Length: 175
Length: 166
Image (cartoon, rainbow over all chains, first blue to last red; front, top):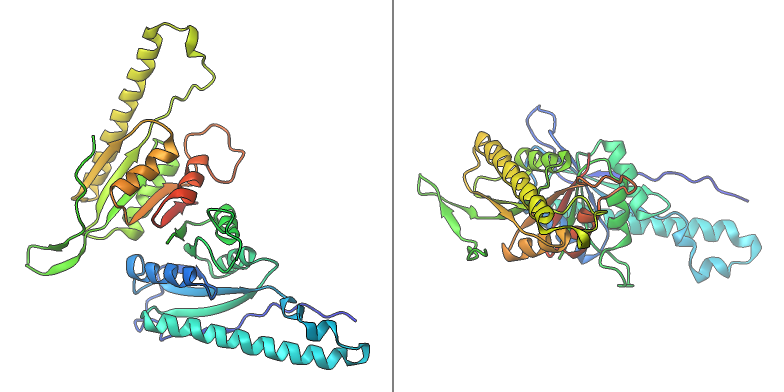
């Protein structure tokens, strides 16, 4: 039994888009996860670079099948596969929705207009780059380190990936 | 020569309105198009009226394959003079560009030594709010996606860094 991989893109409008009929002049992708680092990067961007004419997209990458790494799935007897899977998918969707809502709140709080986007990709960096290409980003904003628990390197793997694969300027926020 | 670090302070403009605190922005330049692009990008996207701009230039001996141990001092002197001259031309070029763009507060700083280290030092010294750099410089080998200097700055700078890829 195999499942098709669906690119999950849930977009929520975080706050009202610019009222004028003008097109947003710049599109900015902000790499977002639930780390303090990402939040600080976004806030720094909002205070130092953001212009009201910007269209900002907060992008969170979800690695597909991560939600299967639970004992529930591994212990499911053969005939109950379907139901267990459905439940896991439902829970995962809920988690993601809550996450995105939090990000949307953050945007509203900092008075940044734009959207929140969830991407499926093999790695967080890939997700951000794909999103940037999709929306035609003019700038990518990322923290230097996210949720990764191993602090062997000076800079996280995601910001490193983005740095090496972006076609547009990248702002790396170091705290 | 080290300047006394100016504290970030609120600035009042001609109308007497207090505006945002002054930010110090450091942009690393080396004469390459990439550095040019970084400066242009700053002027177009980041620039704010109270910014103090520091263009940091750390020249490096381009001819790394030359063995100086057997050469006379005059060869060394020549190289040094060449570097000084190109640094001067660079300063003139950017001074003109900044004047053309109405930049009121800017400085050209030169240092010598390990390029990445010195740039990070300058940023720290100036208490920079932001460092901008091109993605690559004058390096002749384009093996990497990201130049060694930008890479170094990214990994060691204390403040946010914008790498101007294009």
